[in-house]
Length: 235
Image (cartoon, rainbow, N blue to C red; front, side, top):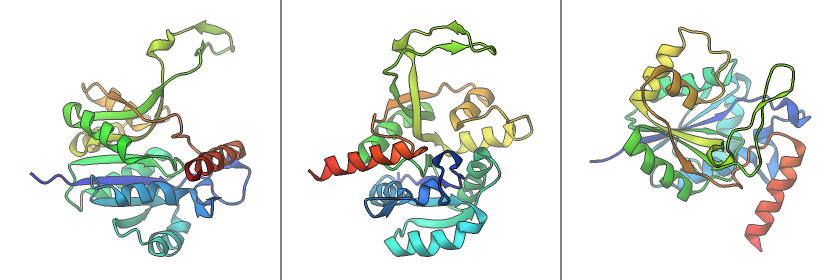
């Protein structure tokens, strides 16, 4: 049976920590915008049928002309405006998916340029079995949980601590229904889509290994690291 999978790529962030007038997803690394790299991965992946790009309302035309058309991303079927918060942008993408056949959805931050086909395969394999999977990596550092006064409250065992990445991959009907339900409630503490599944369904979210290189471009230092990754690939 043919499987129809959609990537929702989020590019609506303001990137205030980047200290730049240009939004982080449009800054260049090795001559291409940050957003280009993840779109290229989804474009080239045989697992993905459609890409929905979610950006700021004022950037829709720019993304269509200067990214989608310029680089020939033919799988981008829709460029739409996001919302005030990340979860609003995700929901806009999920609603757009209802207009096309969609079995599984890959929700990805456009500021993470270093995804690979192997990551997509690992994540989808687990999602087919469980309905929900997030990419991540075991933490290299000891993690401390703090109380409200900035004192250490507890130290979780490092073997069980993962830092979560994107894409996060879900059975479309599951994540859409969960988002429909949670939008009637307070969403101020929602920081990723796995939390929506955790709070609104009985489905356990699986983990699949991403990569320590699958960084999110957030601060100027991240651009330096990204440049180093790309240089090493060309050596």
